[in-house]
Length: 485
Image (cartoon, rainbow, N blue to C red; front, side, top):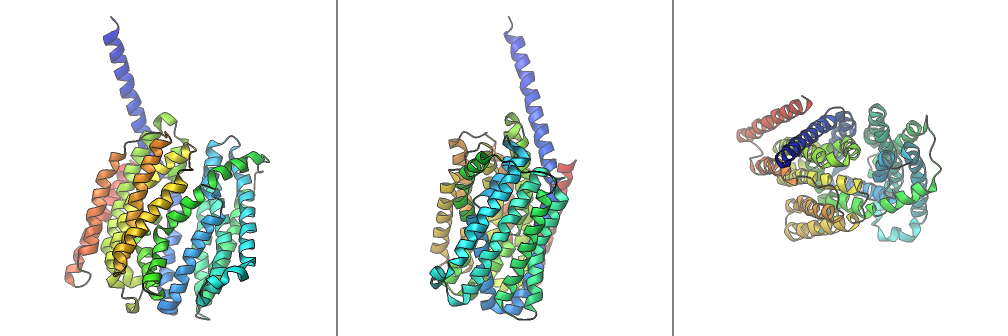
């Protein structure tokens, strides 16, 4: 008797649930690309503005000198991830999902930073035992890079806490101090004495100033928790993340070392410039992560899959349009960051290859959010290094005779990451989501990036690049308007 009525009731409930999930997803996209854009601009703008400094640095130092700087920057990033004990990845989750909340996150900021200082001090003081393994031109640069990475960790820890506190203006101020202050100071020192070490001294001083600013912003107005159990729990989650983070950065950083190994240190500098330009869209998606991750964590579990699918589709579309734009405009961008001695136009296809990797990175990020929300991050310490190994193996096979083809390692790594994290999400029984929403954005990104790699780089015909890039720009504005409305 009640079967029809019950069926109708369940149908209405299902429609209501779907409508609520859709509304939650739309609101989440608006949060990420709306208010969250403050975090995005605050993170990405200084990094992209740093690109304005690079052309001057390359011209002042030349190919060998800039090659030393390129390798030192890789060391800074890797040492920061290894010496951070995974705290930057854990603090945000701690403040939102853990019982101790903000006081617990504040305690992790202090304890994690102290642990980093202790570890890096030990590594630097024992330099006489290991510096024979380093080439003489790189010795001083690597010591400076290790010092800079120590302060970099404090900055990252502070930014993780500011995301929890939802304080975008201090977040932007800290980002500006760290990411733009150091390069500008290094450039000022470089005008007096043209050496890679002088530039790296400026970088280190910039990160040190930012670390002081970050601690001041985060520790004022609140007390940290005294619960030691928070630190143990954070280390259990954070330490397995270290291999994941290092491998993740080496998706492009290792390509610089491969270029040095297969060719020379000048080729390493050239490859770093191609990666710098080509990975610019990834800077935007990573910056969006500052608002994306907290929104996913805060979503009720029954709505988390819909929220993630909606936001991932919009972010992937944005990544495709931005990646295509960078690939299409890469002839002019490469000539901006380097003079003719670097043969910048020869690297245009490499830039296009790297930009497509930025599109693929969205699938990886989406699955990682759900893995972290489930508190099951250990598998990433295996999945990410294996994905990196697959990408670098492929890059070595195809790029041994052609520097440009080394760039294939970047999208190959992210493709392996997308597949690996999708499997891991299922294995840990994290929330499900509709991954097929990424197919169309990925196809759009592939078409635009292929055009960026194949279209002529000079002459009147090259203006076709500008026209297609303009269409991609209009698409970006349309996407922003749709999401915000």
